[in-house]
Image (cartoon, rainbow, N blue to C red; front, side, top):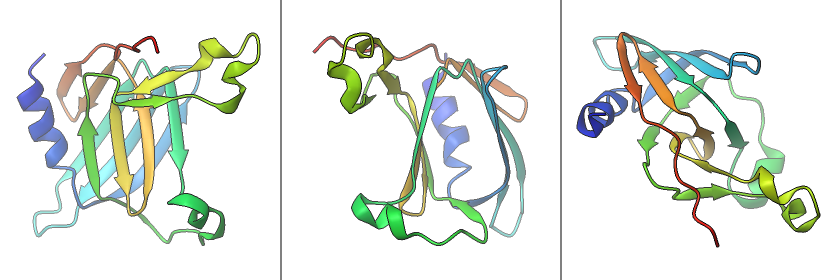
Length: 140
């Protein structure tokens, strides 16, 4: 997998508008229709495949509780991480039977002060497919 090419494609998505967004739990995909805000107004179709985990945080700290609905969603920045930089777990991890539900996001999508963390094995950006594999979760 060409990491440089993937990062170059993701960089093209920065400061764009998300015009469509859908999660298909049965197909394990997250799809987005994106349009750049620059003069060229390039349209992108982004599909995360093999989605095994996703987590949305609607704002920083307690600010996330008092956020009004958005008129539109701006994709500020997008990152790919091959290592488990963004380990996600929950407070129930200490309860029997829940510890195995942790995940590690390899894609981070920033929308203003909100973030969407996605653990996926591939991403398709228009006609370019990147099979990135799943990130490794280190044992703590």
